[in-house]
Image (tube, rainbow, N blue to C red; front, side, top):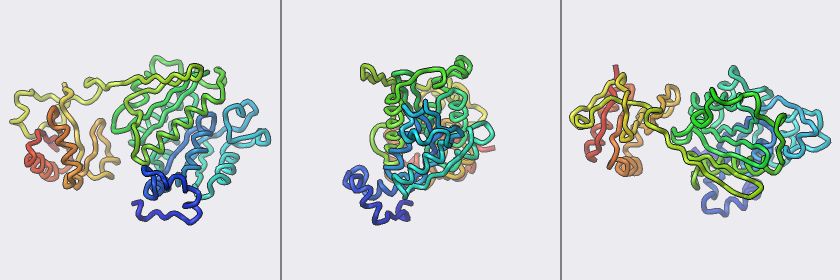
Length: 352
């Protein structure tokens, strides 16, 4: 709860310009202070992202990297300087970040992210920023963000072009939905092979930080259904919109003509879904996180008592039928009664 988060006197002065903003204010600044963000990669994308996130007042920032500073890094990795050559990136980054904002706790993970440590590291953070430069690590991030139900802020650069997207937001797109692992050369995609103008990484890194802050504050439009492609030379921004096709999600075998006459549906019948179904998991948040079911949105039972939830469901009910899931039937029946009172079509997944 943000009510338990307190700002120190010096923090009021440090974030004075934030506090004047209607969309931030004291409560917004407390949200930032409460948040935990993990930046994977302390290079060209990670450096500008961490600088602006620390300056904005994020309470906890984790950084994953196992590399040392080389002179060739300095054209884009702006948190380091010529005196830091051959020192560990994480140590130098932390020293500079603490000088920028001593009220942000910096947690260092001196490892190369891999299949064995990713889950352990990532589980403690709310938002994961992918600031890496190779496909192999991106897929590790993708898989574990999906397993942990974590928001994934993706960024990538090549020469004068950059890309940005938000994955796992509202159970929508994943990185692997756009970039098929089976058709991509995993070895040929990093700064060792390709040239890069430093300001390109700066632009994308700042945009990653921007999306992170917008998500925490709950403001603005989040790029979660689109891939933003930015070209530095002509200052063009192109957005490619992606749609999840029903055959790639979950499928349920129910004849439409019988939809209102059948209350329960077997969990094993998940085939042939049409786009007119919305899946809702009514378990508590901790139950949902512990045993996440793909493509279900989590609205706990107690939320159905609020006007906001009922309004949301009513707005979606005109052309959709809701599929309710819980591991206990009595909770599903409680929700069913509420939905019936509002004449909302729905089904309950039968629990064995």
